[in-house]
Image (cartoon, rainbow, N blue to C red; front, side, top):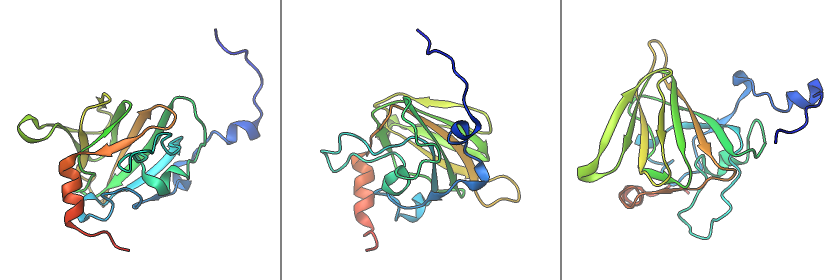
Length: 183
């Protein structure tokens, strides 16, 4: 059954508006954030409360600790939305989510990859293309080309759930361990 309709005031609706020019992100807060090949800015637009089950140290927010606490629109309605900015050659290591993750490049070209080792696959996508990863699929993304005259590409991502969790692959954790994180 649909909810009963009502009049929403401007003040109420403005709490649900995020103007891109005012959004703030962070380049820290994830296990791979300190690696040069993983440098990226994550921007939390909607949701991304910290995962409910953090009993295992490897379970983290998909946007990291820093960004999960700064949603531009702080609601819990079954999905999360954010942006990532990265230079060509930059993106996270292989990781998994407990819910769906969908990507749509806005600016530039992006590689979306899944699986590791002999089963590795990838596709290069551009503005308005969509890639949707199911829960349990190891995946990563990487900016492969920023738009002409710009330093970074821009991609929208949507992740299902109210407090999604992420974990990196064993190979990713091996790479993370190779470079000590700054203190």
